[in-house]
Amino acid sequence: MTDFKQAVARALEKAIALPDFPADQVAGLLEAPPKPELGDYAFPCFKLAAAFKKAPPVIAQELAKKIVKPADISEAKAFGPYLNFFVQKQALAEKVLQQVRSEREKFGSSSAGKGKTIVNEYYGPNTNKPLHLGHLRNICLGLAVNRLFANHGFKVVRTTIYNDRGAAICKAMLAYERWGEGKTPESEALKSDHFVGDWYVRFVKEAAKDPSLESQAIEMIRKWEEGDKRVRALWRKTLDWVLEGYKETTGRLGVVLDKEYHESEFYDQGKQMVEEGLGKGVFQRDEKGGIVADLEEYGLGKKHLLRSDGTCLYITQDLYLAKARYDEFHFDKAIYVVASEQNLHFRQLFRCLQLLGHAWAERLYHLSYGLVNLPEGRMKSREGTVVDADDLLDELELLAKEELRKRYADLKEKELNERANVIALSALKFYMVRVDPVKDMVFNPSESISFDGETGPYLLYAYARAKSILAKAGKLPKKVDYVRLSHEKEKRLLALLEGYPQVVHDSLAAVTTHKIAQFLLQLASEFNAYYHEVPVLQAETQTMEARLALVEAVSIVLQNALHLLAIDVLERM
Image 1 (cartoon, rainbow, N blue to C red):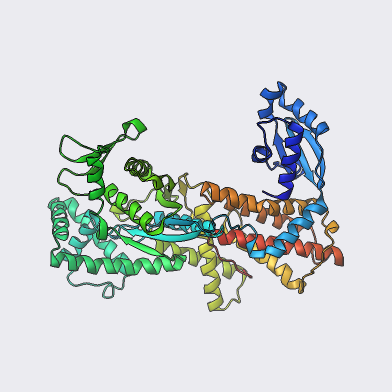
Image 2: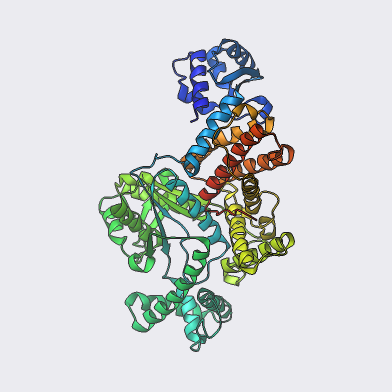
């Protein structure tokens, strides 16, 4: 909470004078007005209507007359049911610019998580095909969550789980064994995970003509579980190909993992936990002899934990993995970045762990996100119509190069490639996190790469413009006459900068990053409007110095916020 906000909250607490309405609660109600001319903070009086037995607009008027304004507040004025506060321009400029220029990359960070550990599981692919568009949304969210928690001092353990056994994996293996004829990724000039994925698609097509292939794949699963040497060797070969391809793709995106889990190494380890639950009466046997968790009283239905033949389900291994992670890391929070299709699964998983008596289950959190599609419709992996992550990244880089060539015809090839890579990744990452994760979304590659509009390249362009102004100015002033920042657009920029730490704090509390994305768009838009309307380098010396300090602060906060979204910046576009 900012100093100004705290001062306003304390002043309101005294003016309201209700024992059950402390400053902290008041602060939680303060809002940012929709227009600059309405001030810097707005207090809604609706919640006071019952206590005062008056209409909110009347309460606002009375509080405006009664309140003792804090030192740096120039005015408290009623606007309908709101009491709005105006911060003195000089005080705002001095406080914000000094803080941003002093703290620099630390501005917006905190030590709130010092000594605490977060385990973040994201990405989690099935190892029978390349990563696709859906994985990209997962990865972009996961990268941003890692940065967000690290920014507040948490130790972040970055993890994934490879779902490397089961029917889908055996289908790709069987197709390769049947029709591969010794082919390799090298012989076919294919990226290794794409090579394996093509065999999975081949299986689906062949199985449509010969249904017996399905039972053959199930038989291969049985042999794998029995440790059949031939099947295990085939599995290892195809798995290594896929993992090699994954590392190339994730390397392009900046993924670094601290711990990698493989389903094949512990898929049956949760049996003991399920059987212990059965012994305690927490779980029950169904009419077929399987073990279930009756979660009806929690509105979660019944969840099968073990089949009647004793074989495991996904939740069996998830029970074990959650406990194994807690035993190893003693986490304060464990986050699962998984699509919304698994909402019920995770609610059931967390409840089962609670019923087993694990108090730490309260620390588990499912970061659910909606489906991501292309403008032409939903992807279908079984039909081979999935948009591969590599192909999309390549397309974005080509689009970025086209945009750069339009603007800078004389760019050297190396510089062109480097800039195009940064711009392409900014386009992808920002587009994927700019909306609330719970919402389904449509990813439009050509729209995402635009240098105008709500895009990553637009934000990079705003940052590069600020750095260009600073570069032309040369040496920046150490002392600033803050009175010179009197333009309304300057106050709007200062108010946004001042509110940035709160945006980051709120994003951390909600475990989401779209609020930061929306803040970035606001800041870039306001800065671009300022750049076009208010002269910086052409102003007289003292005014120019003050405006340069403001431009520098904008560049710092743009870079800080983009960093939280795992987006690199460019000094020049």
